[in-house]
Structures are given as structure tokens and as C-alpha cells.
Amino acid sequence: MRKTLLFSPVFLLFAANMQAQTQPVITSWLQNTTATGYGGYISNVQLVQYNATFVYVSTDCIPAYDIGPWPTNPNVPSPQNFVCEFPRYPVQNTGTPTKVGLGSIGLWINGVSIFNAEDGFHWGGTSWAMGPGTSWNRNALLFEAVSFDSCLGHPAPGGDYHNHVNPRCVYNDADSTHHSPIIGFAFDGFPIYGAYGYSDPMSTTSAIKRMHSSYALTTDTTRAGGPHPISTYPLGSCVDDYIYTASSGDLDAHNGRFCITPEYPSGTYAYFVTIDGSLNPAYPFVIGPTYYGVVGSTNTHITPVGPDTTYTGSTTATNVTLNTTIKYKIAPNPVVDHLYIYMDSANMNNIKGSLFGADGRIVKTVDHLMQPSIAYALDISDLPTGTYILSFEGNGKTVTEKIMKK
Image (cartoon, rainbow, N blue to C red):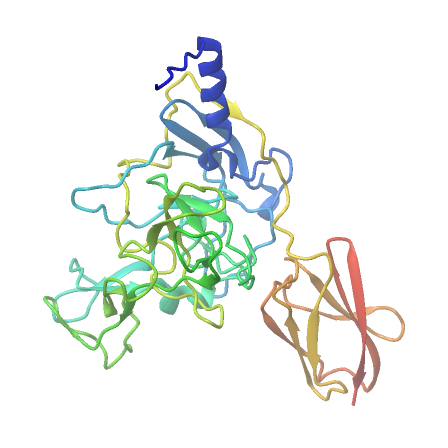
């Protein structure tokens, strides 16, 4: 005989509140109201509110970790005063998929904007002058990577600091032994994970693997607007050079899949950042050309419709710490002119590197704060022969290495 269970209104309210408090779209954000980042601006997410339908995230789009410089980019980050809206219960768009537009298409968990794979320029018609056509849209990685900082981000003309590709300072993109964490949410409300997931999407006991997109370069160089400008730009310079082949990779046309994750043990649709075996960004980088879910027409300057509850359970003012030690490799030593330094992928972010002379004074510094998985070159050709001390500092740790200049 089936039993009927009766619940009091108080229990139902408690259960609903517990469900709200454990939803990743509410609890995953890195909140902070005091610590500053670039330019002395308040960093990370300032406020998280929610009601029965939406979550509202207030952010200036400034990360807590150090950013810059941006070669060839005249723009500088500035506070964006965003209030972004995310559905608490996202649903698949069963109609015509919504194209991911230019500008912010979601947020990383630290409140920084996510941009799509394009750089905003395109070729149209037959003259290959910038025009109204959309036949060939430029790939942001190829045309803008020169202005990316070591966290693979840069500011837009309006000051919106953002990543088109894998945000390497948000999580450890070299950790291929664990399922990647949630690192952001698209504006359709579905989570975005790092590069690694379960090989069997419905089994938490299956092996961990790097997620592969189902897009690949095509040799088809003709579109309605005319032939590809391949005489000037190689294949891959346009996002249209990539075509989707169902089931050729782990992810669908939106760069996601339905799967079990540590935060969603019953399963969810989730996007995954895509990188190659050398940790370089792989198209379509974050979200594909279209969203999987239903997304509103306005997402970044929302006026919340109350009553709203403020969530304060997840607060931090620092970037993700990857390790409590500093690991590196240097070569050659002894050195004649250039010292090459490779920072291990398991390091924390923002390590300061300094070269000290025998008198204890700093004679050289690395151009900017050092990040994991990055190689740096230090020109010491102008220094006299002798013994120097290379020092790395970060997260309260200091390690040193004796360097011999020949």
C-alpha cells in the first residue's frame, strides 16, 4: 500500500530555502566588498541576490588577481557596474538557437565578463573591406591574442575586462586528474566548467579526460560573400573556418553536453572550456556560436524584481590558489645572456620574480607577475659576470636559486 506523506508549511519553507542555498548558480560566486584589483577598484563579485526565478549578480568585472599589461591595446579596465541576470532553473531552447552576441555572454565566477570567439570585425562582399556582410568573422584568438595578458584577458574599448578564451588564472587548467570546477555561468543559466570532465558523462567513476570540441577546420573556402581571404590570412583566422560534426568530439554544437558533475550529481547541461594538449585555447573556446538554453534579450544592466534574498555564504577576496609551494625550471645555468624560466602548472598565480646582485640589490625583475604554465625570458646580457640570486615570492612563500653569469 502506498503511503501518503504530509508536510507542514514550515517544513516546505525550510526545504525550499535549503534548495535555494545549495543551488550552484547562487553559491558558486566569489564575493568580496573590500579587496581591490586593477586600478584600486573593488574586485570580484560585490552582491548576489535571488528570488524564485532569477539570480542577480552585481560586479564591476575586475578580478582580484593582477592583470595586464596589454601590448598594442590602448584600452584600460574600468568598473562596469553590471547587475547580471541568470535563470535559477534554466531550460533548453527548443526553437531557433540564440546566437551568442558580441560583448558579455556570461560571467566567470569572479565576476569577469565572458566574450565569444569573435573579435567584432568581419569581411563581406567581394572587396574584403570591412563591410556589412557577415560571411567571414575574425577569430579573436588569432587577431587579439597579441594583446592578451598572462591570464589571457584584455579590456574592451568601454573598459570591460574579459576573456574570449580559457581563463587560466581562474582555475588550474593543467589539473587533468580531477573534474574541473564550475568557473562561470552563461546568461542562459547553465554552468561553465573548466577543461576536464568524466569520460562517461553519466558516471562519476569513469576516467577524467580533457573535453574535445566537435569543431574542426574545413577546407571549404567559399561562402555566399565570396572566397576566403586566404591569400592574406590562413585558415583558422575566421571562426567560419570551423565546422561542426556531430559526435566527432565530446561536446555538442554549443560546446556543452548533458552530464553528471560534482555539483550536479543528478545531471545538468554544462558548457566546457576547450583547450588542446598543450593547454592552448581550442575553438570555440567557451560557448559555441549559439546558446543551448533560453536567454533574455538584456542581461548586464538588470533591475531586480523583488522580493529578493541576499546570499553571502561564499566570500573571498583572493584568486584561486593552486599550490602552497613555488615550482619552476630554469635554463641555462650558468648563463651568458638570456635566462629562461618556466613556471610549473601547479603554482599559484601572481608570483613575483626578482634577480638580486651580490650586494643584495634588485638588478632585474620579470616584466609582470608570473603565472602558472608560462615561460619567461630574462635578458641579463648587460650584467657583469658573477653570482646572482633569483628569488620567487608568492602567497607568503619565497624560494631562491643561485645563478652564475658567464
